Length: 347
Image 1 (cartoon, rainbow, N blue to C red):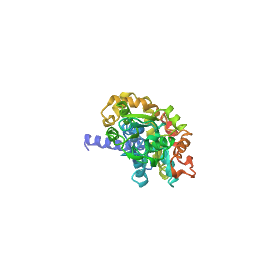
Image 2 (cartoon, one colour; image 1 turned 180 degrees about the vertical axis):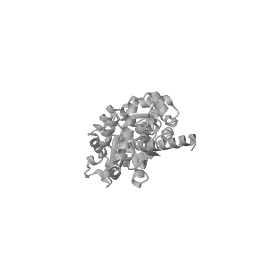
Image 3 (cartoon, rainbow, N blue to C red; image 1 turned 90 degrees about the vertical axis):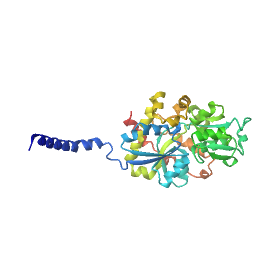
Image 4 (cartoon, helix red, strand yellow; image 1 turned 180 degrees about the horizontal axis):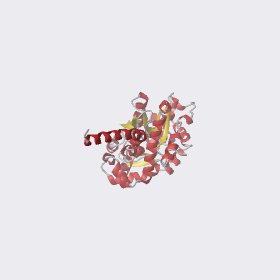
């Protein structure tokens, strides 16, 4: 046997031996995942409301946890929920309130990591179609734009109406989405009022298209409206998914908490470099201004505050007929176990 051939044979053998020891170590972090390919549904991915999800995706945090995540974007949170119920999504990045509503309907859905500690939704009236607005009563018979009927924006609008003495049936809700379509609907006079999020709200208010009546983009304003902490965007899924895939659920929570911690220290420049160009809606300066206005609403640790679920239930009880006379076990709507473990990992 020639020297070169012998050398190749020895090297090949060594590589084979080394790989036996290296491979298990290299993949040990992900070896126990019950499911690696995960589909996440979201309603309005470009919104700051769901920014932690985008950060986890764009910075490769899901991949670092051994996950192959596919994100499907829908016009609103209600559509994302439908994807979960229909079986086309494993997890939803959506409003916490859905876990309460679904429990009453006999479906056990659980939130396992918090993205927003304030809803970041603002409610305003059109300065074009309602220049003489004086009170909520003026909205009777009017068209109100929401991201999608049944979504968190719709719930917030219902709550505002209820505080002003109106029922959801007193107005017409129009789904306008979360981007340029929402802006166009307001500017073209297709709606008379709107409940939406940033950057849409900032773009409309800075151009004097709307007069903001109620704002939940800061902790102070949120507590003033709801009377306590109000959990906003979360990752939620069927309880059976968590039971069958605890390690996968933990991996998802790890990635999200890591994204939350990145957002606590990220500079405006960091953010601009990370989000897709279309998120800016053609105005980088305005996007950053909107970000500074909602930054404190992002959860620092992914943990749902103890009084948050109670606040959400009290809010929903003001207008949700399905909740009348029903007992809701709030302890079954969320768990902080996964977020707490993620915080230990990413101190």
